[in-house]
Amino acid sequence: MSDDDDFDLTLFLPYLLNQAAEASSMQFQQFYKDRYGMLRTEWRVLFHLGLYGQMTARDIGLRAKMHKTKISRAVQKLSERRFVSRARDDEDRRVERLSLTAQGRAAYRDLYAVAQRYDAELTAGMTQGERHALRQLLVKLQDRGSTSGDRNSGKTAGRT
Image (cartoon, rainbow, N blue to C red):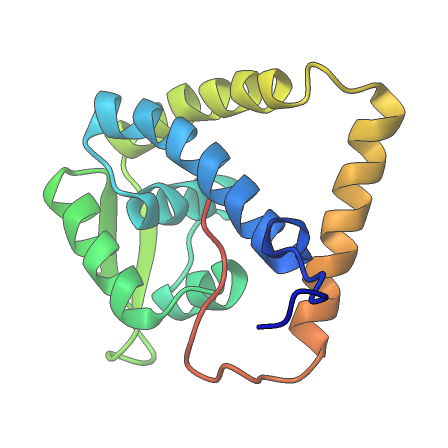
């Protein structure tokens, strides 16, 4: 490495994004971990079912950009805790339709309110314009990452 190498890892955009995502995710994780004993993947599965209704594991994987093995483990844990019900598809017995139970819906509603408050806390020091710009830019980066080719086939992104 030369003395005139001015690359600063701490300002490298992927590094900054990862650090910000990890810090905010770890802080939010305390809510769902402490209240419900959930891991990040379980929280994400619960929220996808809460937001979109009945889904298959494959549907969740596509939306959440999570590997099917992680989803399968999360579904198993959520089923054991009676947050998620599983029903075989009548037309294709290999497919399971997943939905939240009454207990799962209650946990979702509780954590949804916590997520809204936490989101507001994260952006409390920003103007409305800054919050809007930040979200737009992050969506733009996310879309660009999704359409720039699958350089990491089989790997998934996303921390929240």
